Length: 239
Image (cartoon, rainbow, N blue to C red; front, side, top):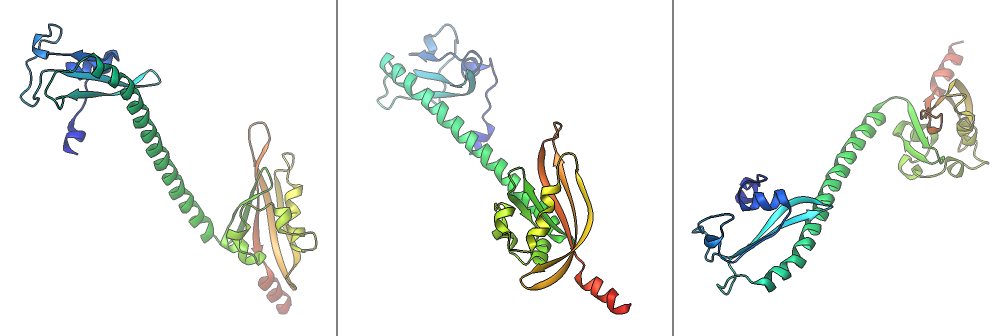
């Protein structure tokens, strides 16, 4: 791990740097007899022969692989070079695939964390909130909205709100507000409605709105719900 972290390829510097910069492989039978690089063989290597291949993906060098110290102790030959010319491009693709996977995994992990934070904030607000997308599917319902509408927020996700609340369900009157929202009428002012939910009359105050793009296409519609039942009943008792 220490070698992996500390090893850096500087383009144009040394054999690896040359291969990385030029994207050209090198096949050397004896480094000490090579006039181009004029290196003495390092004591870290048992033989003087090696092959150095660039790892290329989409015409871009992502690294260099060095093949040294043939097990038999002999110098590498043209057959070895031809074999690695087939293997190394596959290694490059595999490394790139792993890198893309790890990058995607990290991005998704960050998105999940941000979504969790966002949902946590919305679940703490005192108002009920329901959001649907351009296909009329519920993509978010906070806990307060589920409480007010007598439904499970998690089980409501990805449902078309017209399917979730049937025509016989009085709550459908509430969700009919979504139908009124359009690019011409971006907001609906607060409306107080008596809604029958599972045999119980509740008084809900509702406001609606939508989010549009620069071409006035609706991206999301939302309603904000407040349960006014206890407050209005208390006011009626006082009067």
